[in-house]
Length: 136
Image (cartoon, rainbow, N blue to C red; front, top):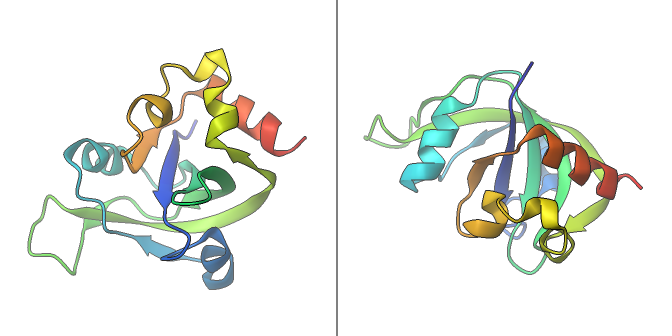
């Protein structure tokens, strides 16, 4: 079974609508050491939850990885990697961070504990709960 990940993006820079329109993109710009460790663990076919940061602060759509990680061709540092992602579908409605924070099950989730982290695993039970909230 594929792993599940949350990827954050600032919608004014690159939104889920951009991903839907382009049908595929290179997910780059990740430099935090922990986020990079997670990005290096992503594999082709893994499921993605796309999360808008900034003023939105909500899970908005689903995607999938269409490549394994590889060194960012725009960087001279082989430790900086990118993956290619494609959209799957928009959530029925965005799932705001405040709603996620309001549920006890999410207390240990890195989205709540490490709010600056841009890439993180999503445990199956939390993935299922977010989809329930987004598709009600």
